[in-house]
Image (cartoon, rainbow, N blue to C red; front, side, top):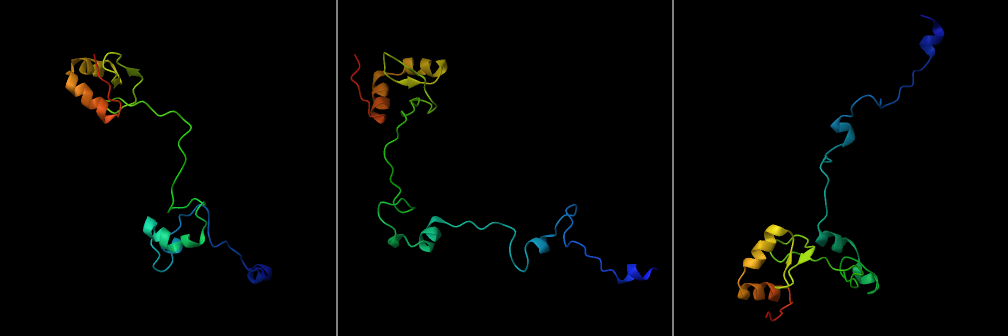
Length: 124
């Protein structure tokens, strides 16, 4: 062989992009491949919340003002979003199948559903 080829030092990259990395290279000596998530208690202990001002929001004082968006109307029977309401019973319903159930309910059941929603209305 030629002397200049023998004397030349080959510099190869330590990682080839077309090769898969081995797990032992990615996580050296005892590190697990699974991510460790912290619980809320661990986050609170790690932070010094006593040093923060009481007006600054953090994990301890999660208070927020009322929403500016209107509240969603929920079906009283199924719990789905309810675009309709029955004018006779004042119950909200999601579809025609639920409407049939709403119309077949006795008056005392209708009053109970309205009481759950804090909208107790005396029906005629």
